Amino acid sequence: MPDAPTTLLILGASGDLTRRLLLPGLGTLLREEPGRRVRVLGADRVEVSDEEWRTKVRDSLAEADVPPDLAEDVVAHARYLQTDLLEKDQLQQLLAAAPDPLVLYFALPPSVTVKVCGLLEELRVREGTRLALEKPFGDSLETAQTLNRQLLRVVPEGDVYRIDHFLGVNTILNLIGLRFANRLLQPIWSAEHIEKVEIVYDESLALEGRAGYYDHAGALMDMLQSHLLEVLAFFAIEAPATMHAEEIRGLKAQALRAVHPWKHDPVAASRRARYTTGEIEGRTVPDYVAEDGVDPERETETLAQLTVQLDNLRWAGVPFVLRSGKAIGTQSKQVAVTFRQPAHVPLGLRDTPEPDRLVLQLKPGSISLDLSMNAEGDPFELEQKELHAELGKARMLPYGEVLGAILDGNPLLTIRGDEAEELWRIVEPVLDAWRAGDVPLEEYAAGSDGPQGWSLA
Ligand code: NDP
Image 1 (cartoon, rainbow, N blue to C red):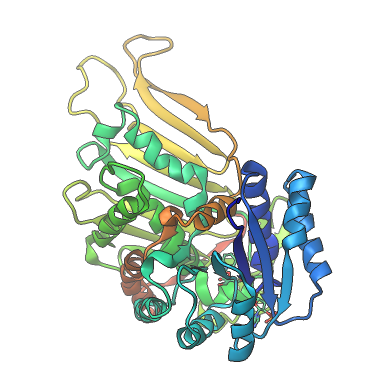
Image 2: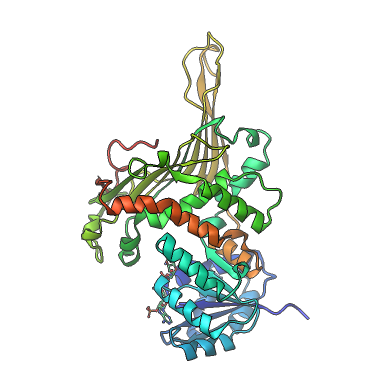
């Protein structure tokens, strides 16, 4: 008998995440791994017919070029169950209607997720049920700790999958392959050879109607607290022996435990700014505070920068600059490594070159290595040349990779409870300093590269 299909029960199936990211991700997963058997159940409080839900699933699979016979098989088993998830009886009926093995995917507003978990605690879920939880995971160290404790009363930690879709981004996973599979790079991945690391995610997109979420989060919580610190963790880990999930997650948690604001001074280590009106690619972007749903009193930043250090043997003294902004003129999504100057350059070679740099572009993926050499023209003069490689296209969307691992019961691409808490522990002093007004909220015109005078370390 073939294995029973895994049930992916999406709670919040009529929401934005399901439509824009989850179903398209699932489509690319099924296209690349057509042997998978998955039953897609949707639950939400709005009335939707089975047929409408099946059309939604069918369209997403077609969009991803899933072969029609496979798509129809998935569609035929897809069902929608109208449910008010905060009604205990309805939730119970929903769980009873969802066959094992079961993944409960919380595509719900965070406050609803917490309440549903509370009900699950009372109802008890069947052994082996997996819970997939979206970001944000709590909104402070304390709420993350409380949520972790609550989840453990529902299922064991091994069945909790905290999502950060950056963990499914092929160029970020490449940090492990690039570093550990290359004799050239592996020995120089330390403070002895690396002067600074910049992890930047500046996008030209502005608010795009997402004030309801973003104005409560801001760039620090939306990007640095989750995604960019996770990238840092991948960058900075000690050498794993295997790609076993617990080994990698343990090493990431170990790296994160060493992270603190630069010189342990959250005020000097951080900067924040908000965009004003400007032009991006020929279109006028309104002032952030003029956008529908924005409350200027919240002082939400649309650009955040935080320099951190790792208090451990490998990285002591190396600044890691994390930065992310919206409505930035020059998009930059990259990890840039600046190497230290060599201890000695032969006397007689002219022109001190720029330091060597390795730049990993995250989207689209590429790698550049800037090396100093005496190349063209005067053979006694140094100059920099770039070695460049384009990385192949990812086989599937990041949500496809993450979903695939969850359906396999492999937590490698999700965040462990202690990691989730460390991510808050790191940014909390910065959030406190910002709330106290200790770090001024600067301004920059949309389409510019941020406020004047910000340097990356
Ligand atoms: P939405 O508000 O678009 O969707 C949530 C859905 O849950 C809505 O359809 C909502 O119905 C439904 N819902 C709310 N309460 C109940 C209830 N009691 N019973 C049944 N259904 C209910 O949110 P998103 O899809 O944008 O976000 C979902 C999660 O994903 C959040 O945690 C978010 O932070 C995270 N996320 C979202 C991203 C995105 O791009 N959208 C990106 C990354 C993470 P109703 O409309 O009637 O309230």
